[in-house]
Image 1 (cartoon, rainbow, N blue to C red):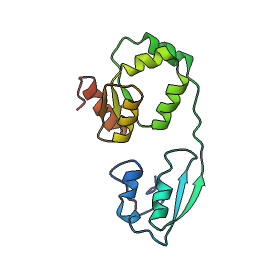
Image 2: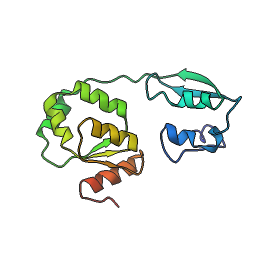
Image 3: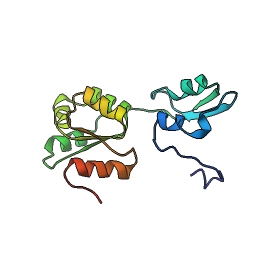
Image 4: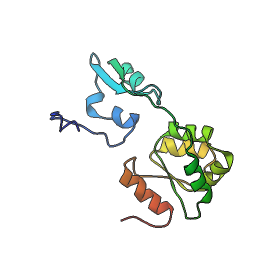
Length: 159
């Protein structure tokens, strides 16, 4: 999207998390620089303090809001009726926390019996801390990486 908008030099981190961003060469020596973060309230809140500790001035623009949705009754019914193997792809600790707070105990018990493929070590630890016992780590957070890990977890490797 940035290239389509005319930005010639685009750098993407190897990891799609705060740690991946902080490892980028362009963000290691930022003393005296102004860095704009386009974000939303909430999240882990670790990027801005880390960049400030490196001497940067942070200009934060909250341009959207994360709004948790109530559980869809049809989705709950489908999960209760599920007989096929299922794997949970976990890419957001905040979303998991909302799910654990909002969903009925019987559905959560079924979900906790499913394998979880987590997009990061941090998310894998969060899943384990919340009672998920079959937790593995995907190569990363991209859909293809999560699908490949889900296939492995279900015993059906994806080529």
